[in-house]
Image (cartoon, rainbow, N blue to C red; front, side, top):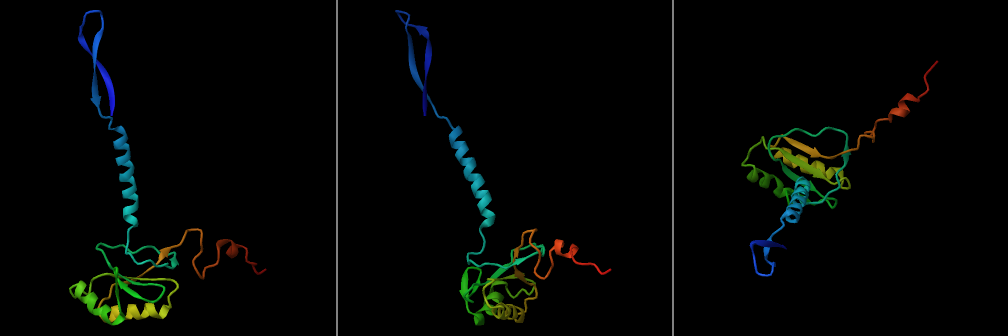
Length: 166
């Protein structure tokens, strides 16, 4: 809060003017802080995803387009299964999925598996989801940087430097 003085238009005896404080609030710093908070929330909101922490494998494939929010089934590094944020066992996974989706076989289900988990465990989960009647099942991976070649592909320089038969 800052104070400024305001002079009255009337002169008193002796040529001195009467001054009184005028209080006003400078809102510029408050607006600056609010804009910074807005930017922080806008940046962090998309980063908030399903709460189970897994280290996803990398891929060079493009993301699948989608219209509705899919259900996430996660297998962490210890092989534990989570439906959204709730831990479930393999036997209860299918009934829970059917109940959540109202037995809609068109519901999209994303399976997120930690890259350290045994692949057979992820296949058990995907098989259980498929056996429950869900056909739109996708395996979630992280996108690899563009400079990293996909597994099984030779780097571009190595392809060009191969010896050509004469």
